[in-house]
Each structure stands twice: as structure tokens, then as C-alpha cells.
Image (cartoon, rainbow, N blue to C red; front, side, top):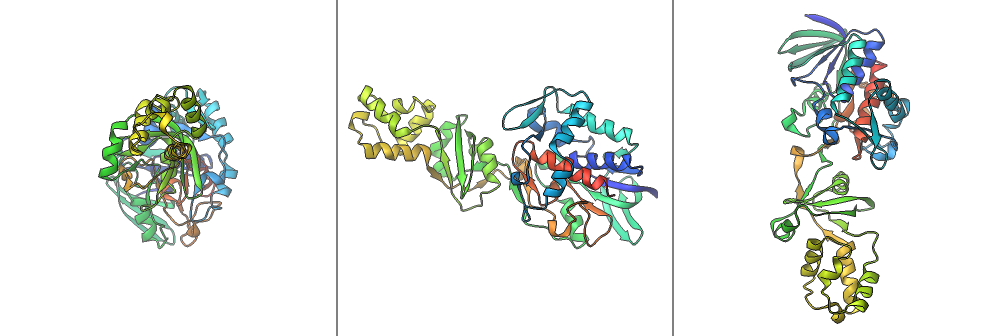
Length: 392
């Protein structure tokens, strides 16, 4: 049986960060992952350029049953700290929008950074290794794996959530938590496209591919970003963001032209050319197909000259307060993250260690801390991994 100080389960963002930090402290570290290559979700992120953090990161950008839990980790290892690491490795990057930082080149550069840090810290990585059993006694942990048995003083669970199962995602981390008596909050897909029922989809599917800069709200939460119509319903950054707040049965409010005074624009168009159709007038600030959709939904075929101000206000409501009730989401298949996870009440916020099981740690996506779209979840991975790395 091979013995090491620390075993990290999961070679993703949080796991690799934690392993490197633990190695820097002189701990012998082994990272195990069932995938054949490390950092696969890093590789596909950000369109292959990896949105590796967000300059605007704050606790308010995260969802959790305990919103204050993430404050300690985010303040101890900040976005600026990770940017400094990226700069030390000579990786060129740029700010896209809203504080989002992307590699100028490939997301593989971030993976290479983490592996270089791992190597410099003399930590070992063993891919293509599945854990089949975990034991625990007062002296530490034993792991049965497809590559033999291992023992360690500290065990770190960095196995992520259920999102994107084709990349190998499973609920393994939640099973480990349950084995050791930790609570797990409800988990569900987040940062995921929303889907429509058949009748509505029949009317919106011709719009597939149409995108606008819109506003999407659910309850008191709203996001101003792109909205994309798909063959299944709605996607785009604003929809992905609101999906983390939406629950089945609830409706969302979609504004297709939030910066436009629709009534004023249509009144002006009516004065200028009352013979034109509503669809044509809407084409002044909406994509053509979307203008047609609005006109057909309101059954308006007559020219603008025949539309009263009250009718124009109906149009404005249809454009900027479209109430729609999705029937579901595309699920874990396309969800970028998993909402919920290991209950933060059972973890120490400074070290990420289980309160009831000494030297058992949970970090990254497996924990009930979920960020907005835009690099926030990577920053949680770096921050929580760094904190655990100082304590294992």
C-alpha cells in the first residue's frame, strides 16, 4: 500500500490548485482522477480560451444556502492573486466584458500552468484511476482503487458536480459526503438553457439562431446580457444566468429591447409612415424574424396608422415584458455547473475541512457554492483549493 500525506480526488481546477499548494508546504501529494487527462472542463471552457476568473468577483456573485460561507476563501485568495500567477507564467490574456478574463491563446495554457505548479511542488498525478472504496480510522484514510491501495493522512474531495456527464462528471463527491455523515443540499443543473413546451416551441422554433441583447428576470433577480433563441427554447448568457434562480413552474420575464422606448419609437414610425406594417416598424430595433413573431403573437396585421396608443402599449409589453413559463432545462447534459452540493454548515469556511471528520476536505464545485457565469466558478475553484492547500 502506497502511503502519502495527502490524496486529492479530482484533477480539475480546484484539485490541481490544492495539490500544488499542499506540495509547496512540503506535503507529499498524490492526485487521482478517473479521467485519462487532467483539467478537461478547463480545456473546453470559454470556447477553448478559458474564462479563468472575473475581476469583479465578490460574494454577491455566488449562490448558496449560506451566502456568507464563500467570503473567507474569496478574500484570502483573490482574483488578483490568480491573475498574478497567470502573469508569472507568461500567459497573455484579455478582459472581454463585465470583468471576464480570457486567455488570448488556448485554455490549455491554464492546464499547463497548473501542471507546472504541480511538478514544481513535487506532487504526483495519476490519471485513469477510479476509486472503488474509502476507509477511515483515527490515523487517516485508505483508498481502494483500480491502481491498487493508497493511504493518506488527509483526503481532499475535488470531484466536481454532475454537470456534463460526457466529460465524466458523476455524483461521486456527494456519495463520499454521505458516507461520512455530511449533509448534501438539493442539487440541480445551473447555467443551463431553458426549454419550452411543444405548443410554444412550435411558434418560437423558427427564431432559432436569433440573438438580442436583452434582460431576463425571475422574481427580483435580473440579468442584462444576450438572449438566444434555440430549437428547444432559450439560451444565451442572460438565460444561463437566470437558470440558477429559476425553478420549474415559475415564469421568467424577457425584455427583447430593454434600452428602447417602444411606444415612442412606434409613434414616431406611425407619424412618419402610417402605411407601414408593425413588423416593418419593429424591424427598426429588433431582428426581422423577431418583429414578425411579436406581430403574429398579437395578431396585428393592420398598418401602424390604424393602431391606437393603447395598442402600441400592448406591443411594448410584448417586446419588453414577455412573460414565458419554461417547462424545464436541458439538464446536466449541457449545464455548465451543478447548483447545490455538500452543505456548507458541515465545513469550516477557512480550511474547507469537514467539521465532524478531521482531515477530510471538500473543495470546488462539489460544495454548495455556485457562481454566476463569467469566470466566477473558476475563481471559487482557485480560492477554495488554495485554502484547503494551506490546511491539509
